[in-house]
Length: 116
Image (cartoon, rainbow, N blue to C red):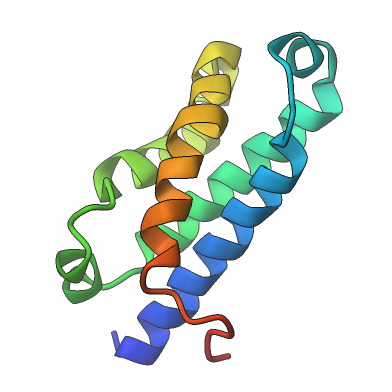
């Protein structure tokens, strides 16, 4: 895949990360547990991040070893293929612990306006 293609997927990942961060700013665990619609949205956004990550070339992944590619894509697979066994605690940890780390990594190299 071309660098331009990887930048598109990196940008898409970063867009979804920012959407998660918007929805989880000041989010309490209690509100998270009570809001099924929010959990569905967050699951979808995490799935899209994994799908975009799945399309990043081996060269793109190698250039950014700080991103846990296997875990990001693995979460997508879990949501898509094992959806009946998604634990809310895992989603909570993902959006409150892992997404901020992913955002920090992506912010270092994703251009403000990725190519289309």
